[in-house]
Length: 487
Image (tube, rainbow, N blue to C red; front, side, top):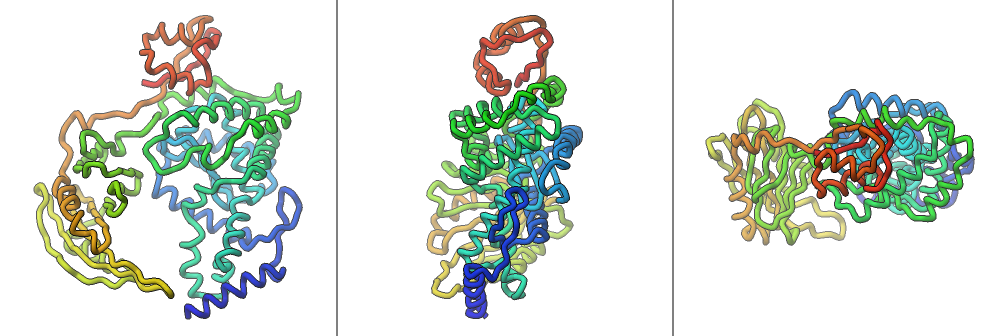
């Protein structure tokens, strides 16, 4: 069957290159392009990606802010080239400053990016830009190019049930968030963002101060997440800003900006990493909301998302993944379920037993796992150390991984971390709160520096406030001007 699948892939590539695969008309340019992914499948890819995003990064839990972003975005949809798509808009709960467009009309803006915007028109131009990527089918076109290089797997899934089983996992999911668009794609998305914002009644001129704020991200440290920031996925140059400036029209000055109402809605927005969702301090990982803690091996890197906590050794030869699931199962039974769920591997049991960890029921299993050999490859046997611990109706599973030959060197670190897992009871750790934005109004005509001095805000917080408001300390504030402050 492997040979048949490989032959099918080769035939698909040949068919595409010889013109037997039909082209699609780009709805923006009106030109024909090779497009191996039809709109129906594009929408299905978007659904799958959306599900992955919700699980991996989580949505920001503020119904009013979500409804606001939805309303602003819907104002632009009628003016897009693909206004029949079932668009979805959401705010991601991450401090990283970015916005993304997944296939089929799924568009996201992070709370980190929301925090640095200063008007509704800025938000509209950002959403318009992402709508531009969707309407010009930039991500789908890039995927089509990859498919030609990898054998046309998505098209093959229509013809082969075997290929269909693997195609979705190869070509959809979170990787669409990491696409780095070309210079021409960014110019086109900018022009469409200007067009859509203008048609929706917003001033597209707000794109310029937004871009200038984004440029400052080059010297600003990112948050504790693997998501890239805006500059990583939307390359920004002085030339691009100049081109965006040329797109503006005199009549744009009379269109909506809506600054004050937007800024008021930023009041209470979580800024930076949210320690309620887990944080590292003094060699320990604390999770106040779920009320647990465990030790982190010295020098290991922690990657925390709503879906899991990953800990990787400095040499990247070993790692641990912690997940949690609500279940009524006992640890031993749950452990067996986890092993049974492993697909396409050969499992050799080394150890399996129940135990207690800091008063909590637990089960441990150590297994040697060999992936099924692929043609021309010899897979390396991995040691998988599984520990399932039940606390408050939740099953916490540590999956520790290392190559078979390396496992003994890391077993001590694995076990010390597992043995340190405990309920979190320290009020100091339980009551930690995230930084939030508050909005204050200038009491009179004054500079930003005078305003901040009058509020007795420490000088070490001034650079962040300058960045969030796209101001300098010498910016003149009129009476009543709202200003974003961080605690």
